[in-house]
Length: 182
Image (cartoon, rainbow, N blue to C red; front, top):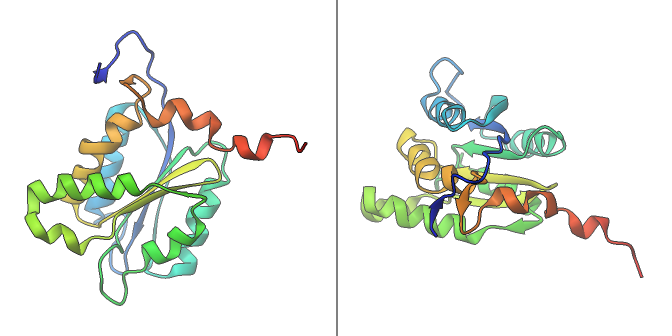
């Protein structure tokens, strides 16, 4: 079966949204708001939201702090994934990943290609895991946020989605830290 298994109960996840921008504020951040609206409509809990400038240390610091918060299961960043000199979100976060999620990037580009064609190549969307927290790095346009949420995250962050989803493996993301040494 592919899709939602109504026999399973929905499990809300604690989420945080980080907008990376030198120019946006919370009042005019359409991309961050697009994510917040979708997160809440799906039934998840928005635990934190912030905007930081295109600065590697600020991006890494905010995301790392959120991954250490036991109430946050998922961090989604928007912005800073292009090729200009100020676009540094992947450089800030990929070195922190304990595990990379190459499939997220591949699927995001597949979905994006259907909407914007070869222009999808200008995004360096990525994903990974840090401190048993999922991190998704997506472009800064509202359209890209919609594509990532509607096409990937909505299903994968829903425990009822079958045949598998990120929620059911969330408790095991840090199991390597819990093993006793022989």
